[in-house]
Length: 164
Image (cartoon, rainbow, N blue to C red; front, side):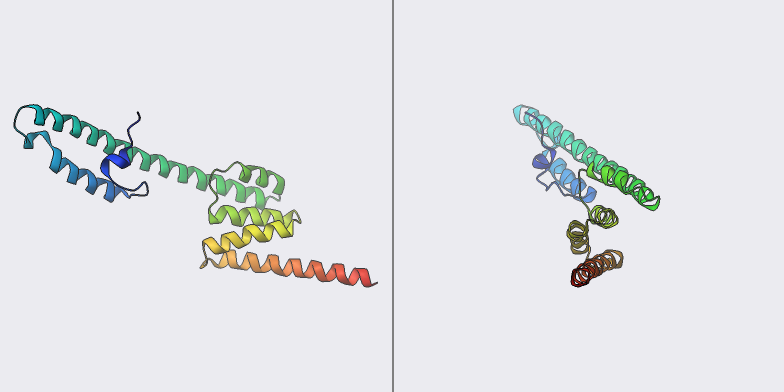
């Protein structure tokens, strides 16, 4: 059975580096083999401490992997923005579809791409999600307002063209 470092340290998977370190230190103080007399208790504490050490390393490695994933995601989002800047909306859409996570910036960029591909109704959904995820972000709020205005304008244009 695989070792679950978070369970061993009794911390949530969202724990920060400091929370991981604090949990490790508390358990290390409690279970360090030097605190026990020679015999079966010390042997058991030795095994326990080895498990605690392994859990600590696993949790820290998980933080590094998460940080690398975020760095890679940020770089990929910059690539998407470059494609959008070059007017390559289909390529940007394709790249965005390969993402594992859907952060506010992802939703904003996807909505922006859809707007430029004249898929206004879908774009409104993604821009709304971005604005909801980061309500204080002016860029997301403006994009949502622009999309709503564009939809209203298209609706009015269609209505007037039918009357003629």
